[in-house]
Image (spheres, rainbow, N blue to C red):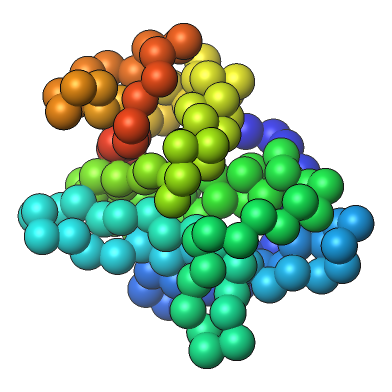
Length: 145
């Protein structure tokens, strides 16, 4: 995706990324973290504001006026992570239904481009199926092609 995005800062393992959202509410530090799950080769994508203790706040809504730029930045972290770890699956869901909906809308908007590089699945009725536009999934699972 050739969209405006923020400069990412990451450590060498590419597990944790940081950037700063710049918008109407000021400069807001953000974190993206890929965490191992109990399933082999499946990582959870965590994202949100950076709390003072260095943890992720995935509940607060920033409304900083830069949603598309922030989502493009998260996508660039997914590309970097899956470049380094091409055999892993990345699991993503929002901390709320509205955030999951926002992720679905982002995937839908750029689906044709994204599916060139990723296999994309959605969780529907406790079953993983290939991503389909217009379907309200509960979570997403992607893997680099």
